[in-house]
Image (cartoon, rainbow over all chains, first blue to last red; front, side, top):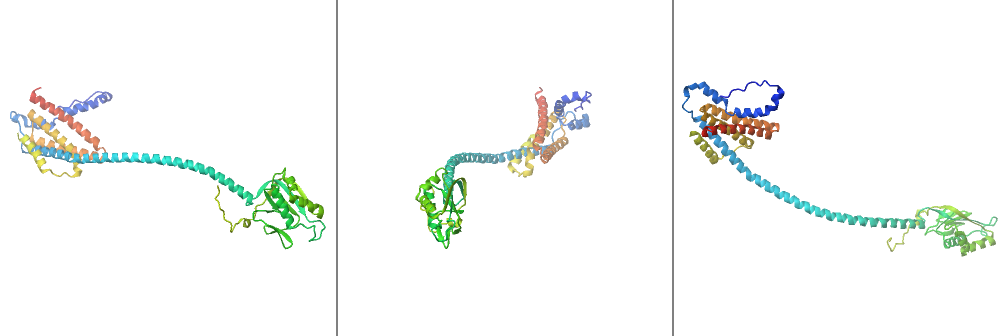
Length: 287
Length: 110
């Protein structure tokens, strides 16, 4: 019979340092069920001498132990093929994933090079786009699709002050045509007459009693503004046949004709209906 | 003699019949085996100590198996099944070893 250990009178702190060790000691000290000792003591000495053997119930318990061991062993063995199967399937999955990874990595490399190629293409195209935009803006400026500003020449022309209508002192559409032609010749880049910008489709013609530009009737005096080199435009215009013709008009017919070089002129855009082509088709793309 | 016979009959019966164990019982089988082994070694030691008792053996056997399974079941419900299984196996293992040591002393007188 196992005696109960005496009560520990040591301070708690001392006890605690040994408590886990004592727990193990206690477990091994009481490894034999106390009940055996108690029952034997209760039986007293009557049965001493002859060993007490397991009887029916003990045998049944041992049969149960055998069955338990057998079942557990069988269970573990039947579970192991499943485990192995799972493991091999996991291994094959790992291999699959690894090959996936290498495949995707090479694909990623491929796509990376593609991205780089496309990026360099995009950079080239970006530069080309800027060039195209420059060309387009230049074209819009020269066709008069946008208002223009810059230095140039302002010409004020008026009919003879006290001349009668239809006489030589009246400015005709031909006179303005000659003047505009001379200005182009002298290097003008944009011209407007009384605020009517001349585009590629603009005609200067007489309609009824008035001269019209872009279908707008003009009333004298005529103010012709031309953007061009402020240093040379006036002199160059004076040298052209158009300029000469106007000096003749001034001296022979008393027509008013004044030229001014101006630092900054602002010319409006051509009306949009005078910018539409109906029959002409372009033969080449923009470069 | 009857003990060894019973054990052999049990193992043979288990192997031959191969009873189907429900899945819910499966995790408790190994712990039950360890607990039953503990009770059996305790009984063997008591037998050698000459204080063996049939009833005590059966009761300790059943209570060991049931309590061990219950502790593991409770641990599973609380989410610490593995730790509690380990604890039960450690305690029962210590008991088995010390009982076997006592048995060894009896047999070899050393």
